[in-house]
Length: 385
Image (cartoon, rainbow, N blue to C red; front, side, top):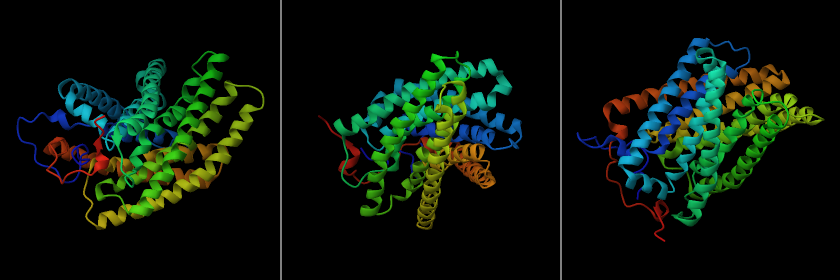
């Protein structure tokens, strides 16, 4: 099965009337929810909270509605097009996007507590976040373990086909680690809070170490086999996800530590947040420059719109929250301005991706059957045994 047949790409056939629109709705569509929710939560995390609350609440509401609609649509996809859903899991280019389901649940849950509480009330926001965080964490752990298992046992992955998309399943637990601390204060004091704090650190370590396994393989593929295909070039921004989200996680965990654990640990966790976060943010900025240069190169070569453009949103949003966390703990104004500048980039990227996606939905192009493509390489087919 071709990679192009599973992911929305610039070259799409027109959707003839009567074609079931849900058939080609893949798990990558959850990126639209992630990218929208992070606009709200990152805006709330900015130092000074200078943005209009009503604007952030409107974006949060849009993300929540999009999540409900997409969950219903994907349920319909599994009910009516089970054969296509099975092909998605069997395709190593598409299966990693199941990590987006977990992150969409987590992102909307976190935004509900940080932004939506003013609309639905704190009690309802806490309950919604607890449910979505639990569901997203369980789903993320299943994806983090299950997708690599499928890649080893069922998928046929050729040498030189590594992609930043491989990071999606393993970064989901890092999102849990970053958003879980907000719930700690709402748990009973004692074992519950300490257990949640340390569980989030475990999720942090799980995701970080898996990222350190995958990222060198991705960079090796770029060095030895050249740039990614044009439509996949935006996925280079996915590398920012574990970098920004891990920085966010350690800073949020440091904030939650004083009420959850005693002894010397809160002070040590605050120190670790800065000593870990600053170097990682430095690397994130280097990768941002690299990914931007590669994207400009691809645009000059004719890169058109694809759903991969949503990779410009959530990963940059995690760098906003990471920089904001570092600004909180260091008091450095440069980090505040970095967070604000990255947020401006995030909003611009979200506006473009959202507008192009809406236009593609209205025209039917994004849900149409892909145009015929050349035979797929061996790396995009699944093993039959």
